[in-house]
Structure formats: C-alpha cells, structure tokens
Image (cartoon, rainbow, N blue to C red; front, side):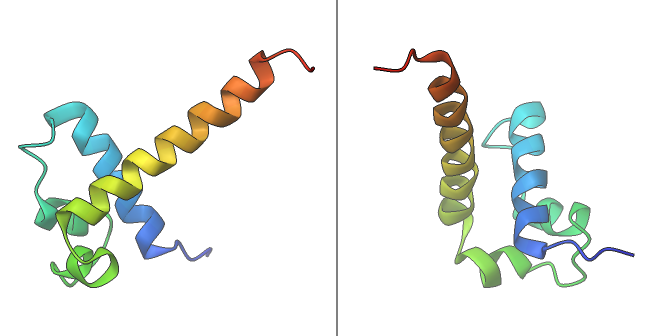
Length: 76
C-alpha cells in the first residue's frame, strides 16, 4: 500500500473544503481528520497554522495555472 504524504493530503483536503464550504467554514480539525491524521493538531504541526495552509493551497493553484498558461503561450 502506497504511503501518502500527510502535508500533501492536508492541502488536497483543504482545497476541497475551500471549494465546497468557503474559507470561513474550513475547520483545521476537519482538514486533519479527513486527511487521515489521528492528531487533530497536525495542520498546526506541518504548516504552523491556518494562514500557512491557505498560502500552500493558493501556491499550488497558482503554479498549476502558470503551467497551463505556458502551454497556451506561443513560443517567441
């Protein structure tokens, strides 16, 4: 069975919860539990808090958009 990186799993869950419930309703406890973490303070441990987790979600999205955009831009 393949092991999933806990940080990556929590970012995935946070992204999903942000999309479905919005930033104000996203609970760090829910992120940890849904990501399969037994310790509900796992987000705090891995990211230092809510803001850093949100920054990681947005960083991941911006990188994906930049990569997609590079395929759309004609070569110079």
